[in-house]
Amino acid sequence: MLTLYDAARCPYCARVRIVLAEKGVEWETVEIDLERRPVWLYEKNPVGKVPVVEEDGWVLPESAVILEYLNERYPEPPLWPADPGERAAGRLLVFRFEEFSEPYYALRRGEDGARERFEEELAFLDSLLDAMPFLSGRAFGLADVGYLPWVGRARDRLGIELERFPALAAWLERASVRSSVAAELALVAALP
Image 1 (cartoon, one colour):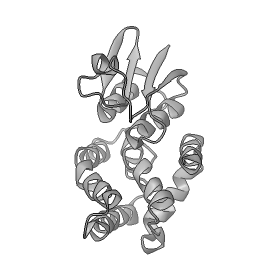
Image 2 (cartoon, one colour):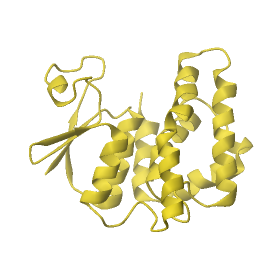
Image 3 (tube, rainbow, N blue to C red):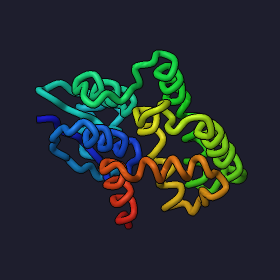
Image 4 (tube, rainbow, N blue to C red):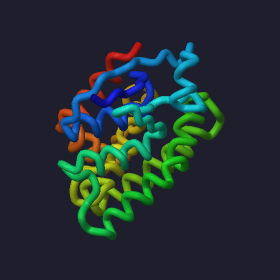
């Protein structure tokens, strides 16, 4: 059975939880206290970060790489589009994710100008979603999973009002009907 070294409040872990649920994979969770990371975690990931998955003695850190692994290891349902152009565009979004996450974390830290920078990133996603229903193209996929945990947390934990970004708000609502995403949003709502 697959083991997920997880932290409920971590959006990177949320990515993995969503994909595991989408794929219908059973997994065991080992909850990690991010304030007091166990020494043994550094044996699984030298930088001590989660998520980490372990399966049959094989260990893999880094959420973006884990998502690709899970999509190939458990091919149904596929979470990248068959169309090479759509797939490449989705992978490019995942590759450029740091441009989105940096202002998100700056906003969490209360840095000057962070809200404006983050809202620029939201506006960029909104413009993409004006042209297609999902960040992954015509169907829900890994590019959507790559951003959903942060957009949901920005709305629910940081007070970002998505009404200014109607295509993005509609995307979040479309994704929220999926049981994997609904479960994640419920988990976020229950966080202290």
